[in-house]
Image (cartoon, rainbow, N blue to C red):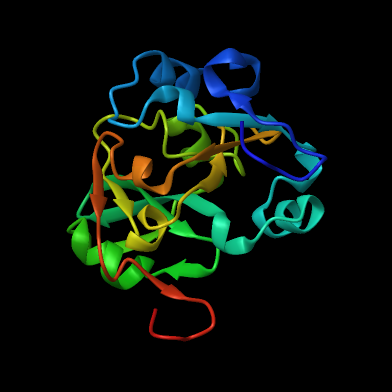
Length: 189
């Protein structure tokens, strides 16, 4: 079990399906990543502080240990391509540059909340890279993979998942891409 603040208690995620969106629980049930599924842990949190900044402050965690999973919609002609991007909370995604070019779209933007929720089967503010639609590209910043452990959503706002950073690169559709994100502080990386 992870050493956490005294207000968070992690347990193997498969033992608490009630803390996971159904798509996340299903993905853990058919786990095929090289990382043992037992290393994927979950903790119940206050849903009112599910957003990354509030969560890290409330529970005393570093922003650099939190990864955000955002859904992007790219459009070309009448076609929309959905993709998910996973970056550290200390970075921002280059959606209309890097991501747009990578998915072959003419325009790209963060997906509308209702579209993201419907497509993923997850709650907005809890979207996670585990259990996404299999045909979506999962674009991952190398800084996420380089972390010993990262905190991501669980598909629900009332819990968070902890897993080794390398595990995100093992998920279906994952592509680790330099240039996906830039540090918020403007440093080169």
